Amino acid sequence: MSKKPFSGRIELFRKCTAAGFFAILLTAATLKSNGQSYFYFENKLSLSQDSSLTYYTFLTLYNNGSGVARIRYIEPSSGENRLTEINLLDSADTHGGIYSQEHYLIHEGDPLPVEGAITGFHMPRFVFKMQNEENDIFYVPDSIAYQWPDGSWRMSEMLVNQQKSHRELRKEREFVSVFFSESDEFYMYLYNMRTSPRDPEKRKEKLYLITVANTLDSTVGNSTQRDMANVVNIFTQLATDMNMDILTQKIMDNNLSKKAVELVLAKLRPSSVDVVVFYYSGHGFRYSNDVSEYPRISLRINQKTELSKSNMSVEGIYKLLLQKKAKVTLVLSDCCNGDIGEHAPFGPTFMKSRAPSGDSKPVLNKGIASRLFFPAKPLSILIGSADKNQLAVGNPSMGGYFTNSFAVELRKVLYGMPGDATWLSILANTRKQASWLALAALCGENRCVQSARFVVRP
Image (cartoon, rainbow, N blue to C red; front, side, top):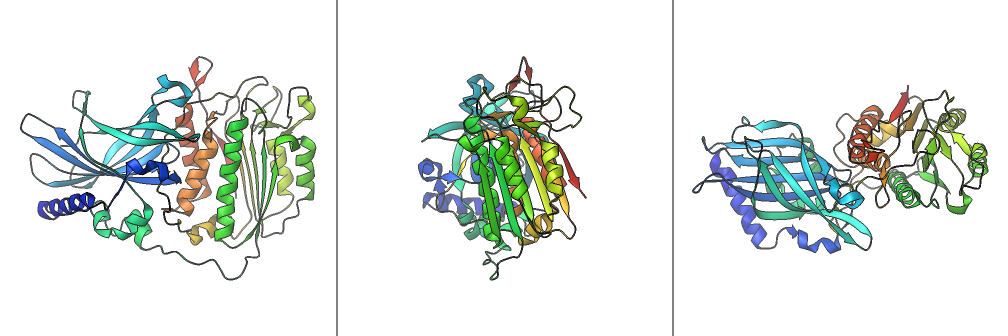
């Protein structure tokens, strides 16, 4: 791309901005949560007294503290256009405790050259600040610093700081083409995927969703409520978009008990084409002589109930559900997997934003959904959010790190850019992100190490 066309496009965007073409972040009060958000920045970095460099950034931020940015700039020495891509991770300012007011979005790995060599490029650090509206915590971009060759950071002048909706991007092909070619996945996602009506006939497959949570527990109750809502929402949306029946059982509050879980499992009668999902959020533990690598789930409301008679093995539940012979069986537990008496640690809030109110509904990729939930052969998945002798980290305002990361990854492939998504890739990405977030919390005097365990068969 020559210098002239790129410069002309940026000038066009400045005029559009002046005319109110973009949704400015000051309207954040009208925003709502979504799986991902888009931002556009222009930042001026002074190189010397009489020279400067302007970076043009398109940032996709996922609501699990990860993101990806494409950055355009004109290389100072050659005058040539450059386009670079970087992966990003939330690096919380943990001095603020579990409600850190300021978070940094920093690079993960090396920058990727998209157009031209990576010369004249300074690595950015995106600064986000927390906002709290009606107990809904989210983060908005505040500033961007750039790293100098000696390792120091220099603040830039923020020329443009705007949030973009999916609906707006669908109307702004010229803008998107500055950062993405027609062969890029994101470009094809925006302009090649069209909203399709639900299948006119109800699918014969049914989705059985069983959710269990320690919602009344004073230590994890708020977190488990977030988790349950997150899981119910994603699977309900999937069933609606696929025009299939979903039968949801919620075992929570005063109804939580081992007997209640056993009764629901005993009455479950899926057919050979159905999908069964069992989800648990709450306290977990293991006995010293347990053979299974997966935890036990606590099913008691208070400490007066004998724990030995109020728990079930996650792997035992999995084996029981396999006997039901559904087409897909998914068992997921978000809980600790350590000794009895170890307390679940809380970590800081992770970076998430709000999507513009009234934004367009995401489009389900039915091909990916069918591959994951309607495979040719029976499929079973067993997931534990923490490996043997590890604790599961979460936050009372945002839920378990693993559950949130799982929901974001699943939405990403079902309603975004799936690529060659498989259950293994979804779970590997979930484990990686949850592990990164957990490092911001303390387990005793050390950083928490949380690495999910899972198996996918066949």
